Length: 587
Ligand code: DGT
Ligand code: CA
Ligand code: CA
Image (cartoon, rainbow, N blue to C red; front, top):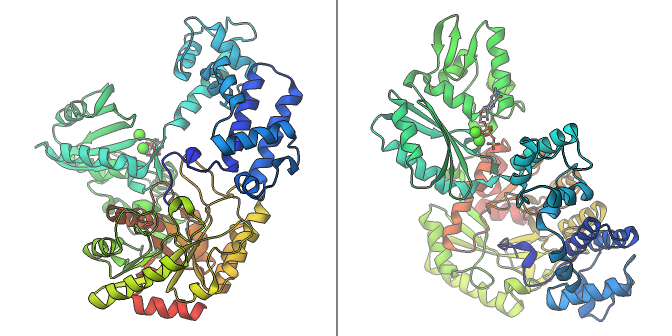
């Protein structure tokens, strides 16, 4: 399904990845119990086999095959696979879990902490720790060094590792913090003493995940601003409160850092706290070369402030064009700004149509008419309806007959609505061998064919790459959707030779999608930039499953901007007529 499930491990069908995860957990638990090393290794090997298996175990069993035929899978493991496939549960795992403290498992997953230490920490510390934070507190209090097998040094190492872990865990998808950010902006804006306020940091740079929110406010009475934040309704805990700064944790776990500065420092503070750190360091170097000093209060020559009220004046002072926040990663933007060579980044208003839209004919929530009306209301001129092909049974994929019925509905809609265009499309599954889940004689009638991988994400690099290349070989495929299949903070990108995929896409006139679902944002920024360098065009898709999902276009455009893309790099900045001609020429 293109819509990422809420809980990908628990979608209706048990996939090989789920089985692999269960086997790995058994191996982890057995390790914590100091079980027989051969048995532990057998589970680890089985997990690896399942990740690389060419076919879903569920499909294999459905066609009468036996997982017993897979390398390293014996009778016992095969029976466990069959149990998971049929019931979604694994008795062995259910029995093991209560024998080992959950905290020990979590500790053993922290890099550098082995199973022995994990168990010793859980069972040795008094009072008995319940969370990683409890263990960190014990280490910082010097209570760990007294345990057998630990010392002062290993205690310190443990604390460092847990601190890294603590930081690593707490990232949030950009879209999930947006409501908090907007509510706080609104609240602070309403404060009479506030002249300007903005969210800086990675949020402003539009990174796909953010660690915390960094708010900057301009005010002559900063203490009133920090008070207002601390008193906000969503605040769960106050970490620090001073006359110009405050840090709080919101319900939901997001930390917010606020800095209030005088008006004349607002640009400098915004610049400093937008970062990135690497961009700041590069700017500081430029300042030093000019005998200037830059910090969050301004740019100074000696004691004199020479810039600081707004960002543009600071960049100008360094002979730079104003650099959009999305580019501030010290990856060439400063050189480009110095020679007037920054890209004219694509904006949401450049997008004329949406090339990835679902309706309730497959797994969407709204009708074709509702989706088209909502798109038109957002100022789009066209959408491609790309419901799932039939193999995606959980997504209620369309068979031949239902697809033909949809053709008729689209023709009727277009006749009745001359000011808007619905393109006929489909999101066609790329099967594990690279063949497509729709016949050529149907695809030839589609305006836009979107191809996508929805299963077997764990294939080894060469197999996964060949699979995608084979799909691109089909003359009707125009877009490769969510190319790597990653789910932010949940599923790593598939192992693809992206350089080969891009060369093939260029040779065949295909585009790669920037999928705007907040949990995908796939391609990533680096791959967008690589595509541009390789001469491959991109297409932006909301992957909308309901009318409100057209908001995803904003996220996809932000990703395109982080990838230095301009309107001409993106096919759906074209009017529908030109786009159709481009697609026809690629066949
Ligand atoms: P995040 O929150 O992890 O997603 O990433 P950022 O970039 O928002 O980082 P954060 O919240 O730690 O700091 C906000 C900005 O403050 C950062 O982008 C640049 C600036 N900054 C923080 N620490 C330093 C530093 O040590 N040196 C310099 N030059 N700038 C820093
Ligand atoms: Ca931040
Ligand atoms: Ca911060």
